[in-house]
Image (tube, rainbow, N blue to C red; front, side, top):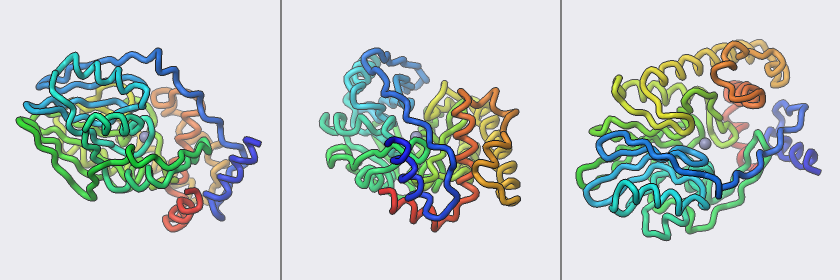
Length: 319
Ligand SMILES: [Zn+2]
């Protein structure tokens, strides 16, 4: 049943494109949130990085409130709030969603209930409201309830100002998804990238929801224009990063893009490129496991092989 279900989803989404012969891997089991502990790293200037389960969180304390970037999963809400209370007695006023994925937006409804404004690119709201499908796993996420949707959306750039603190939000088109935001805290010299940067590991590229490796590279180019050697970079996943780590990550992305572009130009299918192991020399550093290495090949392949209009059609078919 599961295999048939996944095959049906894949067929719907690919709509005429090459269909993977292998059934997609099953989704990992949900984490045991009761065992998760929140680790806090002091970034200086009243800024903190929180790590629990899911995407990393940035906490920016201002004179009259707190700006958070990403909120992980709902069951971690109380633990996250406790970790914030340990560093500041200010209330959280803004929660920015870097993109729609549940490990970054799962806490939305509970924070909104606390009176927090949820800020995101407009496509985050659209994706959450419509429901989405994870192409790699076939897992469907149903439409989010109204109270979990962003309360303030923007399209290109947005600024949040509290006393002594400015968060500059900027959209990067078609990168990890079609609704990515990075947040630049210029005076603190802290950059929060969401999943456009995963430090020390291959990123996921959600090509079925508007992601593309070309946008991922464009994101790193935008970051390299604003960071310096002292910038603390909070990645979507992985440890706190810096400019050197970002440069290395960009180099990996460019290598992957160039190699895959040649294979796609040669007319290779998705299964051909997976069998060719085009990133074998990169895997030791960037693949957390064998599956992650294969998944990265697939998402880079689709980034370059799919036609844009086909991808739009796929999305409609999948939602
Ligand atoms: Zn993500």
